[in-house]
Length: 497
Image 1 (spheres, one colour):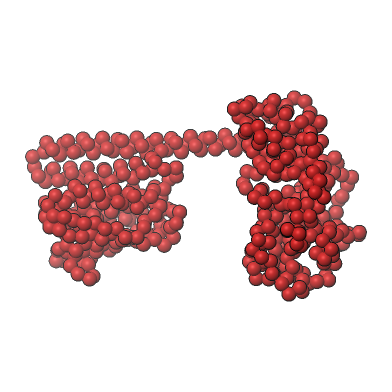
Image 2 (cartoon, helix red, strand yellow):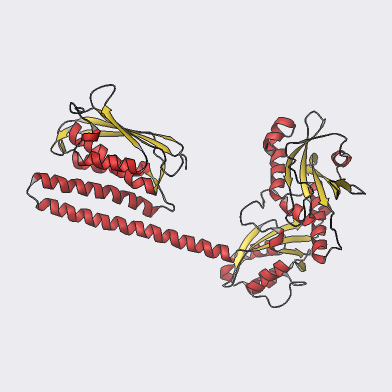
């Protein structure tokens, strides 16, 4: 299904500013559809004048739809719907006297011109399914009256409001709570759902006739409400804005849409949404995130304590082989601690692996190069990696880098000659390729990874298999040294996140 922007670009002569205005209207027109109990279709005039393209469509959540099929992308020739032609030609709302019949269903049709800066740029078709129509209630009459005023504002170019939009996830909808206030900010009508929201805030009487801003000030303590200017602007219906307020019993999002049909302010539409449960869950998630970060912090501290104890033990061992083994254990524990330290500082379960790898590189080369100067260089970016893959990959990298420092340039666990280790990374989606390449002495003759007795390489093979990856170890193709390629199909977070 083509987008509004694509249709406007390819099929019309609308400028980018016109398209931005229509996008803002589409972001807000669910309100108009619900208040009208009608389907809305946005017709864009074709660049050659032959007709109109359906750029967007919205069905009401308050009544039956008039269109079962999607119309977006369809073409309407000039003359097929005279009301659309009339609205665009005359710049006024065009209505059909008698309903049209569609699949044995009577449908009332209206066409609303869309004006921007004095120019007519599109038409909104409003189609109301009249099947089962009964005498409207006061709620429905209030809805329809408000829809009429908003339609007049669309035709005169004063709706939507620039910079204001209602397509955010927690923005109030018509069914959440509907209030009409007059030009003085007094309530003329409140839907049952709106009254229930105010009951949760502590209201004991009725809303009708009450100044909404003043009443809300009595129910919400100053510490839990926005500033006075925002209270007056939103609850008085003076400005197209939203705000959040509440007390110990409930939390409410309030959104105001001033009504200005004919350029005269008649009052405002105020929408409410009770988000008490939503905010409670948000607080639980914040608490949970803080707890997880605290756990990572404590794990990091515990691992550092273990590493310190192993380091003390290594200093007391007189057997060189035992000391080297404990120093390797310290390094492995330190690699895991670095990952947990990074997780303890973030707000999600992913790791900035570039930072982890750089820290691990300094850790390995500082400890393992007392003799010769080994330079480690990184090219490419690892990006964000999921916490499940971060720890094994950190250990894999540490082992490979340590292996290069020990065996490519040195002996007995220490570097004795100078050299370079190149670390390269390539990301495609959430797949990763890690290359560690050195210009050292190379692999011993007859070396095979499968039969190697090296503990470090055994750990690498096990951890790579754990994350579903593969490892290839062989001679450096363009000179002396060793090249290791690790490929992992998924690291939990797509590249660019």
